[in-house]
Structure formats: structure tokens, C-alpha cells
Image (tube, rainbow, N blue to C red; front, side, top):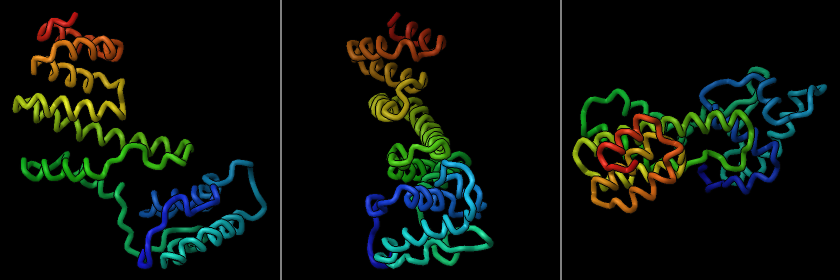
Length: 226
């Protein structure tokens, strides 16, 4: 904000943290009041949902006011929204936009720029403090587009015979999904094609249960790992 930075640790109330997180992650749309109520309240109906949420908003406004964002969350049309008069810039929006453009961009240099921009932004799990189903689904969405972008880059580097780059990128991506057959396949194949057969065999043994039949067969024919 204009007066500084606020971290998640500065939002002490769990309901306040959930509400703020949900509104920021959905800042481009108006979320109905009952949907917001479900996000922060797990104990059935209440007499006055608007008053209940208004009290939560009031509590989060205190820390937000320290950085000049006391008007970040406002009441509008019977619900609460991120103030549309404020310019909101988020890493997750920028990440998604880079990945979306990467999918349709035709210029090779621009594709590389978009990929690198996206990789600089992706940090893994979105908000580790949140354990809700809606967050898990959103987290999975961002992970899936991260993996799509990563696999595009792996295919590019493999076609250029840059096996060290393939190994590094595939291995890094396996931190987020160690059961992905394609990532394991390219990591192991790149190791073998660089002549590091001992490491390739070790990784093949650990990843064999995650590899598809096709990937196992290719590794068998090219590296004699079976």
C-alpha cells in the first residue's frame, strides 16, 4: 500500500485472513454474500450474515489502515468487494497472464520472455496458511498451468539437445509434482543422454511406479534401463 507493506502474519484473526485472501483472489468479480459467508463460517446459518461479515471487515481494516488501505474492502450491493477504484496488481494475475499469452504467442523470443517472467513469479503453494477446499482447487489450477509452461520449455530445450537444461528444469518441477510421468521421463532421459547413467538408473528405480508404459519403454530402448 501507499504507506508500507502488510504480511499475512499481521492479520491475526483466521476469519479475517480467509476473507481478505478470498476477496483478493477474486478481486475481479463480485462474490455473493452467502458465498463469502461460507468461506469464513463453517457452523451453519446465522441471523445476520451481513453484520457478521461487516464485523470481520472492521477488524481487518485496522491493520490495513496502517499501510493506507483502510478502504481496500468496501460494502457494495449487499456484499463486500475489493474497492474497484483501487488499482490491484497481484503476482498470481501476472503469472496467469504470462502463461495464457505463452500458449498463443508465436514469436520465439517473446515466448521465452513470457516463460521466464512466469517462472520468476511462481513460488509453489499459493497461501500455505489456508487449508480450504476452494483454495486447494485454485492452487491446483495454478500448478497445472505452471507445469504446462514448464513442459513447453522442456520440449524446446530437448529439441535443441540442451540436456543439462532439461534435467535442471524437470528436476525443479518435480518438487511440485514428483509423480508426474513426463517430468520424471525427461529428467531421467536427460541424465542418461549426458552420460550420467548411474544417476539415471537411481532415479529410474525411484520413479518407475510413476512412469507410464510408454515412457518406461522409451527409456528402455534409449538407455537400456529395464
